Image (cartoon, rainbow, N blue to C red; front, side):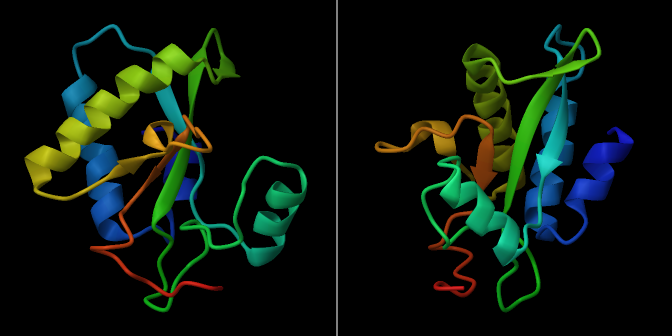
Amino acid sequence: MNERSEKNLKGVHPHLIRIVRECEVVRAGTRRPEFTITEGVRTISRQRQLVEAGASKTMNSRHIPSANGYAHAVDFAFIIGGKARWDWPLFSALAKDMKEAARILSFSIEWGGDWKSFKDGPHFQLPWKEYPGTKGT
């Protein structure tokens, strides 16, 4: 995993880190492009900026650390030709790999691309049901 990803995984729930690492194993030997973690932990201030810009729809983000001290979400980008890319078809393939990694580890994962109202391809999170954290931060 690249240095940026490692840095952005600090403070993320260990189960989600294990899923990301297992996803790398699932993708090994494929011709899929390299990914990077663009965000893990967010401050309330950063989340507010994203909501105001329309890039997020909630202040109740899984990126904000909960009472257990961990963030429960990560966002991805792909590195193609040395540049970050956010092409939707790339995220569909990544979602399949992340879900397979979670299945292998017997963990649950949610993909923002599966949401009905606000599709968020780069976003993966641990479900509220199994990882309640603290809502309303």
